[in-house]
Image (cartoon, rainbow, N blue to C red; front, side):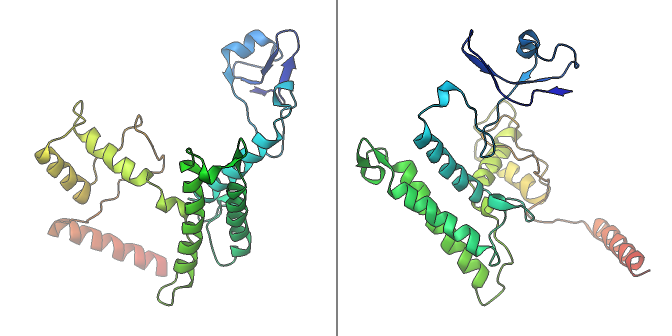
Length: 242
């Protein structure tokens, strides 16, 4: 695989492009190859696209960076994540608490045509981010410092509505072509989800988690199945001690 290491700006065509050549390494600088290959562009903190289309866009860049920080910090799903995607703990509270405060200050100072975004008619998104930063900060402190069974870490993604979206997707997927189940169909679908969880969310739904597991909410075992699992657990324990 030949990877183009940087964005290329063509003055004649006024185009900016970058690509991965999946076919081979010959003619990797050919624009004809790029049109038929996987085209992608990555914009990050560590690398800026220095083209004339990005000139005089410092305010937009600052806006994107702050919202990107908010998204990463509010969507932590990996217990061993690093940086902004790390779980919220007491050990790194000196890192994530100032970030939340920075995002709040940025939103309070954000203006549209001289008017504060918090007083603008389109304030919903900014107000939502502002409230979420306060909610996550207070919730994390409460869960991490409570006297009874304090949590070691807090994964912010657990508060996402993606989980309820996937539940609804499972219910709709059970009906096949009918995504508007009646009461009886909903009853049997929920029963399958509770005892077997044999319904997967659709890949075409609003949200999809590649790590989704078929874990039943309630565990139901027949007497024979219970004896088999108990025997397997005992064998595993004996092997561990040996």
